[in-house]
Amino acid sequence: MIKKLIFALSALTIFSCQSEQELKTEQYFAEGYQIYTMNCANCHQADGKGMANLYPPLDGSKIIRDKAAMACIMRYGMKGTITVNGKPFNRPMPANAKLQELEIAEVITYVNMKWGKDSTYTPIATVTAALTACKEH
Amino acid sequence: MRSFLNIGYNKLFAFFVVLGLLSACDGGNKKLPILGERDWVTKTVDGKEVTDTIYNVIPPFSFTNQYGDTVTEKIVENKIYVTDFFFTTCPTICPVMKRQMVKVFKEFKDNPDVMILSHTIDPEHDTPQVLNKFAKDLGVEGKQWQFLTGPKEKIYEIGQKSYLSAAQEDKTAEGGFLHSGAFILIDKEKHIRGMYDGTTEEGTQKLIQGIKSLLEEYKK
Image (cartoon, rainbow over all chains, first blue to last red; front, side, top):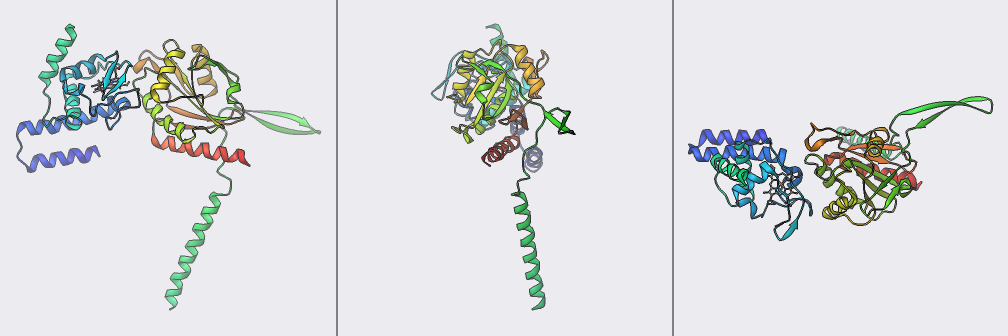
């Protein structure tokens, strides 16, 4: 499945002269998908719909549009009561210190293109700036 | 004409083979095995030596559930049950296991012969109140699915020795604990009758089939 996707992507790359931006978008999306599956889908589910009242959905969530917030949530975890799609959630999300800035940017890209309204990738610079800011808080 | 008949016979033959296979499956030899360590004792009955097999049996236990009630082996008396080990803050396989266990729960909901016992392996954090909220958030109410906590040594002991399921603290593991993703099926005689991979859909479906065939066994 992933191999097919990568193959399809590389075929696309060869046959259509794409701008660097489109190329990067595809790369970020494909890698973001894999990282999401390994690190987030346990809780938020592969379809991004979350699980009962335990784990909030990403699909339809307003929070995912705030990329700085997403970067900080991934790196440092989060706790406290939040409301997602009209439903309250209150359960700590563990920090994921393993993820590099590039990987965080790729997950943000995947999540926002899949369940948000983005059509292009989120650059690493956005993540770097966000992480510096949330660390200072 | 001749070749036509031949084909006909072949088909007929194939039909009977399939029929035979189907009825073979129905022949009652799908009984689940009894798992775990076993011992043999030899005793003398009526002057003859006979050997008895002693199977691994789940010993008596005493834990506290998500309502703060004490739960002992009496709660599963004359019931078959599924058990597993988890902790509420686990970032890796437990959320998947719980999603899968919900499917088992829904399949046998309100069946008085079936229960689920989920043990936390992080009792310091997972108090009855924490388990209560966890169960509610998971959408589980009632007493058919019990979330159990208790003295850590007792939980680890029953996990490792009786349910043959690894459960231990490990600071290097993600989330701080090492445990298996097994769903364990116990019969009314307290024997282990199946171990299933609770992290996969395939394992979950096999467990559901296992419960059904065990229920059948007791109908006879």
